[in-house]
Image 1: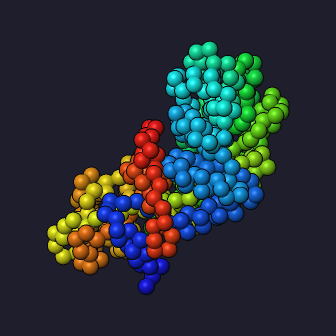
Image 2: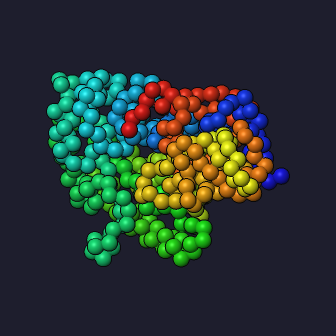
Image 3: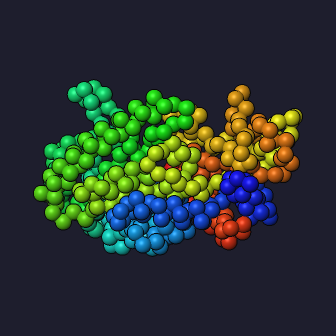
Length: 400
């Protein structure tokens, strides 16, 4: 029996009492992935990206391990909810225009001490000030550096379009703007190198593309390391008490951690290891989060139909954004239909061994987005479900 076949047998036994659709997290794999992130971080603290987890119980499990420290959140409403729930170090990774929550943040000493918000434009400071409604608490802010690689004088750009702050001079000027504004305190810098951390460099069947990605990423790492160090020096000249410099992502942990200017690493997807992380040479994780759909039809030889399954991930639409049939091995989508909202036909010889009611296990393309589809995650240890915990959705929290 292969390792994957053994996993399928375990998951089927563990969830035999549960009807599909159902989502699980294999805790042995989750913990092994957490330990690997810490190993690659080389002693620098790892801040957990909540967007990639979206389950308070599993955020707590990761943070209980020595080496994890703090949360990187994705909306202001989520940040305040986490802070009210007892998480005392929450970095909001994206700017917000949520005036009501800024008013609450500025009026509550506990929230203001626990939450750091992201800015990259003086207009964002104006919005926060206009939203205060008399709240006088100092708002902790972090500046985001654009990490993209610019070539040929800027005519070619590789990387996400995020912050307008690119050069050390631009970031330092924004730091001075914050320093001059009463009611704000600059505490950190963030730089997420998505073109390095979030792009696989070993795509199956595409050796030339994979080599090109590796060359691009090597050049991007060198350029960013130099520029990030210069940015940190320039900002520390304005704010010598800067608390943290955050960088990285699951796919670049060890490379980012090697930079002296970086004080902490951000990672989250590496805990669940969705399918988009199969194409990396820098690490090998264990799939920890899966979902199962039930077989509801057997239309013919080599075909079964499961209920639902059409859970595409965000980003540029393509095959790599689709969930992948994982267990039993050897199933594939019908190219004429793909995964459907209500039903999904699957092709392959393993279909002939599946009965009505059997489970087919899938891996989502991304990590936390799976939790937008399920109210609960069943935590599996060995061949038993040892706990069932709510996702954000299960707690009535859908932040985006």
